[in-house]
Amino acid sequence: MPFDLPYLPYSKDELEPHLSTRTLEFHHGKHHQAYVTNLNNLIKDTPFADKTLEAIIQETANDESNTAIFNNAAQVWNHTFFWNSMKPAGGGQPPEAVEKTLTSAFGSVDGFKEQFKKAGVGQFGSGWVWLVEDAGELKIIKTANAMTPLAMGMKALLTCDVWEHAYYLDYQNRRPDFIQVFLDNLVNWEFVAANLS
Ligand SMILES: [Fe+2]
Image 1 (cartoon, rainbow, N blue to C red):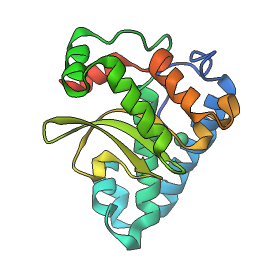
Image 2 (cartoon, rainbow, N blue to C red; image 1 turned 60 degrees about the horizontal axis):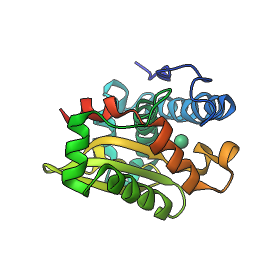
Image 3 (cartoon, protein in one colour; image 1 turned 30 degrees about the horizontal axis):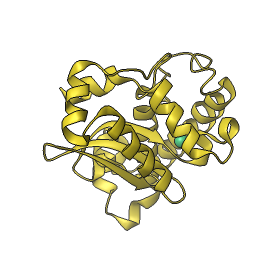
């Protein structure tokens, strides 16, 4: 079965004024859709055609002959995870369980935000910043291009897309501002809580 573009978990105008309808139209409707279309074309009539997205990502991750399949499959997965990492009127104080976990790993919620922002700003070129669980330990990592914790034996808990296409229409070159708004006004803490449990 070919893959479908997943629906957004909110309408395209609901993240206003922090992310514009126009950004969502391009980012979900054009960029995410293109990864889905490319993946379907690449796996057609191959042994990957019957596999789950997760299996395709894990099986192509370190295989140079399948780089294009990996890149598109991982980008499909990463973007779906990113849409779920945000919600309308997000941000604010995390639920108690998340607050405790972040405080024990990073000193405080603000300490977590500071390190997450620093990692996202520090990703040279296109990529992603993640909160992950790695062998029971919470970590902040950045990945280049399509690379995903799913291919690194880690469990993703939260992500922010730091490719320019994620923020350029609204924030131009101001990636630090975008990540700050993501953390203060968009982050879906309930999604983090669900991933933690
Ligand atoms: Fe993106």
